[in-house]
Length: 423
Image (cartoon, rainbow, N blue to C red; front, side, top):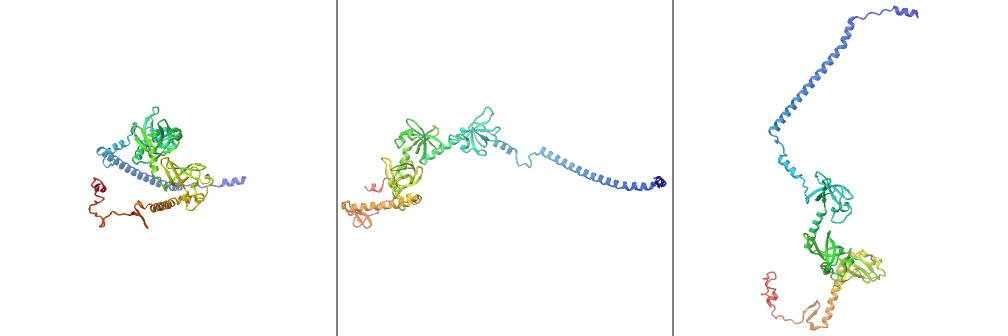
């Protein structure tokens, strides 16, 4: 160890020269100065750009200020008049009776909340949602998102919200519809909902109309007619007096006038009896006797028909005095028994079979008249191969008729018919 220390002690390191240190320092200091100069140049460039942008923005602001001060509406398409017009268009009128457009955005058990673009929301109570009695607004098709026209009927003093109604609008439309149906002399169906000593109350187009007993074709009481539908015609439609008078007798008279023997009508089975089925044909009850259901024997009517069934029947007879109508599906069968095996085919061929039936009836009547003439030659009619042609004795002159004095059919002078004038 001692020898090692002595060896180290003997070592002499030469001193560093100042010139070498100076060279090294110079070597490290030169790049730093170059880098600093580059950064400075970049900063100056950025500063110049920002200065130019600030000057440019300043010029733009000054120009805009001067334009606003001297000509504020130059180049503007939306003028001051347009602005006032827009305010008038969106000016909300909350007076009672005003109609407004609104969108339902929420419903509850008592009604619906409606956005009508007013300062406060509006509310539609369930009793004002429909002309009919409903328990929830959804029954009238009122759901969130529905847009409709409402009428303002009041204001809630608690929260200043408006109260809306659809019922008032529906009533106006219903009266208009009744006036139109009266002008058309149309037959409508009305459900009897009440009555008194003078008649019954029936609902037509959502309105309650009165049908006097003198205008009801049957001798039924109000209790017997309750909840039944009657064919009705309008007698008096007065919205101002809120008076709607209807007639069942007029409707029945028009319906019965259309019940020609051999015509095909559509009816609904009302009830079944051991002897037949009662069919409703436009408010008139007709009897489809068990013997007139099919050419094949029907032992149990319920195997062929059920109450509520819709079917086509042919009119066999019509007793207007008694109000009885006899019906048949048997005459409409393409082949015997089709009404039991394939009633759909019977209804498809109904008009065709009825037409054939009427032709057979017409031929039979013509033959009956011909037979009658053979035994009554004094009737003055002549029977030839073409049918009944006219009288046996002719009063025509031998030279024929002079047609020069007969006026044209389309130039009547209004003083009477040609027959009256010749008399």
